[in-house]
Length: 158
Image (tube, rainbow, N blue to C red):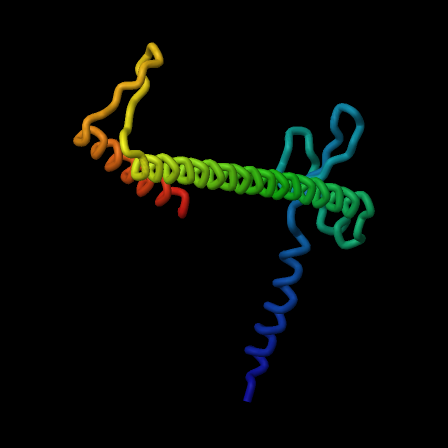
């Protein structure tokens, strides 16, 4: 059986909780250009709006809240737009990097294939003359070409 004292305590709590939310402090002030502003934080020259005026659903308060909400939504939309643009830029950079790596891999493979197929390998000197490499030097060039393929083509797969 519920005691009357417990029932009264529960009823008092139910009534007190919603009233505490209604009595939130809201401050009102007028700026230099004559615009009325509302905030939940005190500002120099602001007056505290009483809870009773909130119960009437003052149209100015509702309009101020709506304007504040629109401003917050606009700011959030701007942040999201900036994040989307940044993400798109990152994706573009990643795609460009992948294309560059694929091209470098292709060129390295071509150099390696040419070094394998060539009977003699040469390097071009500053004056345009060809200097043919010895068999040991040519083997080093082929090994380096293979290492370049392994390195560049492994990067292009990432």
